[in-house]
Length: 348
Image (cartoon, rainbow, N blue to C red):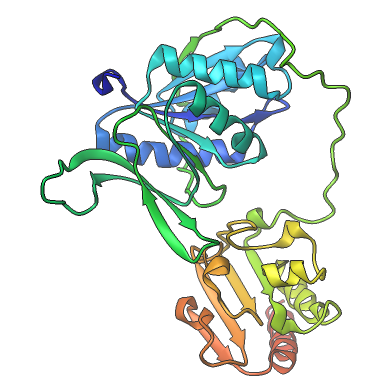
């Protein structure tokens, strides 16, 4: 493999029902940073049927070029045709870096594509940067420069691993949703659009979709919330979450929770923040009755302001909190709610 042939940072621009998923814009934001360090450009790979009109959106969020693979076989996501499409793009254009969102689609697609193009894949990354590998120079071993360093939690979030793929290309990673920042869209931006179709010959690996059932979520996606009131095992019971819901209502926020709460059956998985839940980045995050295990902190530490309420003064959550209150949440939270109600009423 001639590594010098591989150039550019590529992003799989996931779309569903001809609507680009938020993760694509997040990846483009990070791709711009990586491309700047490598003095190269950013290419979005848009796969679907009748999707060419979406290219301008990708340009506004940072794509210099958009490769469109458009075919009726790609109308709905299916593993085989999508893997064939993305692997064909990689073999044709030879990107140095290929980023895929760690969504349900991306986690299915990424490993299959990496196997087809004979490269490695680091899954569920939370940090990406360009640097040297090995990280520290080792006597007798060449230290390679301008490598993609892919960082992800390992062993259940108890340690952090930084992984590189120095001898194969592209360097591939799936990236957790919510951890990368979108850029401010540049209205009217245009990208070079190139259509590419490797041809599709359905075979017995092409599944037949009999029906698509769309679920209707009854709760707000916590990844979109600006204010989150999150509860842990320390809340005590599912009924006691009422005091958190009252606080969230006053603030115009949303209730979320820790893994312990989900494991206890108090709240649904959709509301879980953390390593095995969702990564959130609200303006304000209340951590109430949450000890602050590393698995939970990994999902919320990028919040703008973190407020912790816990009766244990030594709880690890206070290490990442901007404001901390030590005491009984059953007394503190209702008083905070009433004080906020009074403040809001006085300001009207």
